[in-house]
Amino acid sequence: MSRLLCLALLLVSAAAAEAQGLFGQLGNAATGALQGAGVINQDQKAAIDTGSAAVAKSFEDITPEQEYYIGRAVAAQLLATRKPYDVQKVTDYLNVLGRALAQASDRPETFGGYHFLAIDSDEINAFAAPGGLILVTRGLLRCAQSEDAVASILAHEIAHVAKQHGLKAIKKDRLTKAVIGAGTAAAQVLGPKELQEQTSIFKDSVGDITSTLVNSGYSRDLEFDADAAAVETLKRVGYDPRSLVAMLTVMKSKVKPGGADFSKTHPEPQDRIAQIEKVLGSYKTAAPSADVAAARMARYKAALGEI
Amino acid sequence: MSKISLTIILLCATATAAFAAPAKQMSVNVKETQVRSTPSYLGKVLGVLAYGDRVDVLETQKDWSRISLSAKKLEGWVNNSALTPKKVEIAAGSQAAGQNASTGEVALAGKGFNNQIETQYKADGQLDYTWVDKMGAINPQPETVSAFLSSGALKGGAK
Image 1 (cartoon, chains in turn red, brown):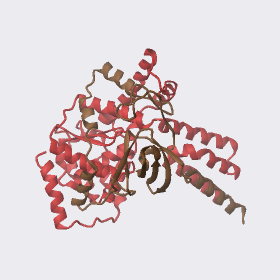
Image 2 (image 1 turned 90 degrees about the vertical axis):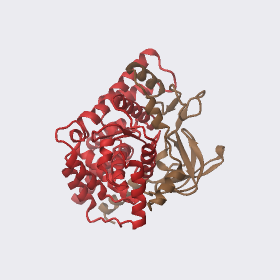
Image 3 (image 1 turned 135 degrees about the horizontal axis):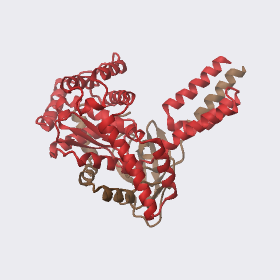
Image 4 (image 1 turned 180 degrees about the vertical axis):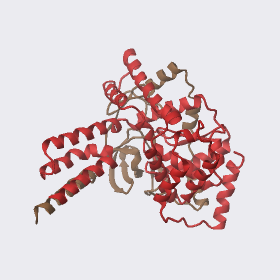
């Protein structure tokens, strides 16, 4: 019996940790089977089902379309106090490279797609608004010394989008209200009162995300999670995932502790490097041929040489 | 067969049944998505599907589904991240989905932070969306991305 109990616990915990949403669908059948097998009793089954349903409600019910509108508002807030670095060759390069990376991520397509913009600031920072609007400062781009390194920055931000880390910053009670409120207002123009209520929930949700991106930062676990996903994406495309370590090493030397930028919202670079090394293990990228390396360097310099 | 191993088999079967068995029909869950000749972003673009298009799923390979949509005479591969098993209902009288879908006309299982909310939010906060719209309009051509990958000796990024 103990072997079976272990298996059951493994199944339950793995599902809960891995797939908050999936477990919402799987939950009833799986817990039913566990109950049927006498592993858990009726009360335990009910508790697990209720818990997983609540989780599913908060994430599954934000549709990609809603995520898109939330992300646009977050980007608008960020851009209200940040000036775009409007140089065509920079924008083009970031978007082609970014698209190539997004296609290799765990979520290649979002409602409005992934789009990238450089910000005219010496600060070392980057922001990923839900749905895929990604802002990167000139200061951060200057830390990169190769195409692979720029790719590592973008892959990390894409991971935040793909894993919906931004949406997780929305306070749970708001989400529930938004979900319930929105359900009553389907497919029709909202009346003034409902419109005001919905807009207020929307505003607060956007505020939760923006203040997390700018002030408090994500949890260390989410940052490590994004780094691990970035490593995977870089490997899939054929970039050197160790370029992420190289980036962080440069950032470590440039970031001022206690500053208002990246250092305020991210774990220490050396802590991230240690975690990334664990993920990388003995992984080695086959070095590109001299021609290829030169071609990548040439286009990187042409686009970002004067950043 | 012992009771334990039978239970384990049953558990596995339950889990498999829950994950497998792809739905026969799926809906497009993004503004628009490209249908390709092969299950890869390097595949030739055969056509475009719009938000809410309901497609028949003929087969699935890893992260791609081969779909057909007779109304558009399209058959080819679409990345699963652009599809949902839910039915995306677009209310009668709405414009075609996508950028113009607006003012609560789009009901995805009846939900919405939508264009109407965005308009109100923008007005309340006197927010400028110029660059948000500009960003959204940046769309590198698939051939440009493929050429970029190829000249950098990079892979098509197959997951």
